Length: 459
Image (cartoon, rainbow, N blue to C red):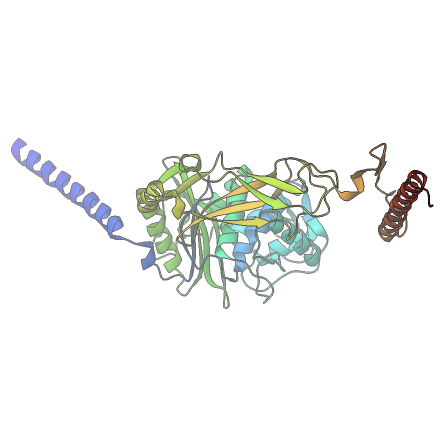
């Protein structure tokens, strides 16, 4: 009997070992290129390194993943999350909704959960109007935040992501936004919640029971198949006929967190099964390296226009590339390749403006340097001014005799026409200076003639 138990235990252990071995083989054989989703970004949440991307910078419609921006703006608005909000008369009824009615009163935090869990378009609109007064005013805030985060290929029109041809983003930009938002602890709690109960309101005696549409986090009792993923930590689904099926997801394992963006999937559940595969592949097949180990360039030089005449370097500015804390996290083959030959990494400089114009002050952030390998972004690093460059209105000109100086001071701000007046005065100054120098030269010539006439009188 004891022998049979030992044999049975051995068989069970063998089966378990084979199971895990087969799982390992399946992910070892898996390639991200197998995923047919048109737009993909898989990013390391800490460093911002891109582990895998496909058509990451091509324009796409974000659908309800837009609500990630609406949510973080709501949390950063300074509004009391427990304050009561009257949703008013203008209720959005298109697409997925939380389901409240006109003049219903809900807590601000309830609207946020209703927007992020059941993807309530009505909740998103109510939040936008509560914060900014109107959807259009809130869209301005969205675009300002997008610019601040470096979402250079994004333009928002609606708080809820319902289709508009002028409402678009990219998979890369959405990953940047999510990386930022996931640093907010309240945001993390909301997007990781499986369900949420809204207490009774002035118009609904039962309240609302909300279930998360992210199938990596929550399985509805009616669901036939489970896509639950134990490492999942968030964040948002999206779907419209034009955007198709979208997913922004996050997962954490062994202290590492990843962000995944999938845009324009055809089938509803394909995005969830793909996400699980991509996450597991990345957790098993990626490696990290500090950018400092690769002897990358730390400065670039650019010309500053309108620099002071007295600038010691004639407007040439050394710009620091701050890579001290930059971590590259990507697949092991890429890490091995760039370790062997760091010159394989290319860098593109993206300044905040096409032309650097004085005054520029030491430490001012001027843009970013983007480091790439084989077309995929490894990491970005901020660019900062190494010194102060003053503008032309702070110039000092030494006179022709070398004695004294003329200081061109800034004109009083706010004077009507001060811009053109400065240039008129500057031109007059140059003309007077030229006449003065010419007259000085003429006087010297006359003196030389007199001396010559005195030495050699005519006979």
